Amino acid sequence: MTVAASVYTPSDRADRVGRGLAVFASLATVGAFAGGIIAMTTAGDDRLWVEGWRTFTYLVFAGLFALLAVRPRQVPDVWELVLAGKSALVVFAVIVGDIPEAQQAGIVDFGLVVVVALAYVLCRGWQAWRPVTTNPTR
Image (cartoon, rainbow, N blue to C red; front, side, top):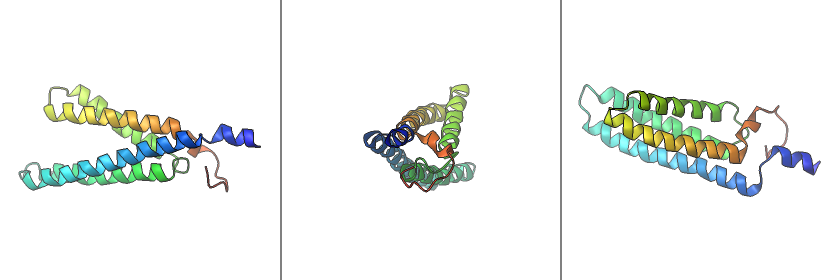
């Protein structure tokens, strides 16, 4: 039985490192939220809505990263949703590459994709797709 459990759960060290990466992503995104508040205060009327939308979306992603840190194998679809969303932003930044704002955001989002992908592997995030059990370590 111990052998089967080890197949499905990561080592304690890998789990801690993966969760730590998710916490890092969450805290970094809270920092981006703080920067977004500053951007909102200086935005002109033509950019205020876009800056507000972006700023409040930082909180959504910070919450998703925090959720992944707390329950990495209990939230099906969240890892994949976050990775797909951030990857789409990286691709879009490459497509519109000459825009300075896109270049900077693309680099940051690429870094987040790498961090979240590492956390996904270390925490075995795909295990969230398994049928629900009563095992709280899942």
